[in-house]
Length: 181
Ligand SMILES: Nc1ncnc2c1ncn2[C@@H]1O[C@H](COP(=O)(O)OP(=O)(O)O)[C@@H](O)[C@H]1O
Ligand SMILES: [Mg+2]
Image (cartoon, rainbow, N blue to C red; front, side):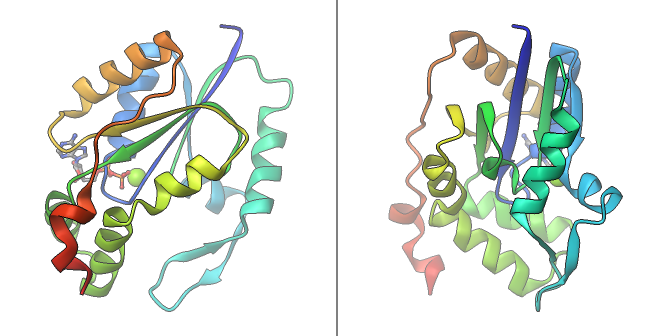
């Protein structure tokens, strides 16, 4: 492959940063962490009421395109906005909402923020947004609840080699309807 763009998205806490690091080693890729990229390129337009950075996705796309200009090789772009970018492969990591809740509690996130993210995961928000992005050539949905990051990275690599879209049987809403109240 001459030039491959891989984006890794998912609700915060699904394991994007952990898996991107390992996958980058396996594939000898550069990694762009969107969080850091946003800070370095001053793309944040303040914070919303829950304290999250507000990012103009069009500006982010433009800056990423500048970064990709004349780029050859393999690049991994990770972050919860990564699925809005163009990509050869877009990985959407999924995680059982109860496990996600535990991971975010461990990170000492605020209750309201944890709830917002757990509910977004239950409702497949990022997956739906990724499915609507026509600039993604191949979408790979992966349940990362029970995989250690290394196994997850290896699975992604296998799926990239197959180059076929992949979906998993994720149905959190059936299981966790009560968490939506
Ligand atoms: N596959 C995994 N299994 C168990 N815990 C994980 C896994 N991936 C990440 N974690 C843990 O979950 C938390 C969030 O992981 P991180 O990679 O920062 O997620 P993200 O970048 O999606 O927010 C961290 O504490 C990390 O150690
Ligand atoms: Mg991260």
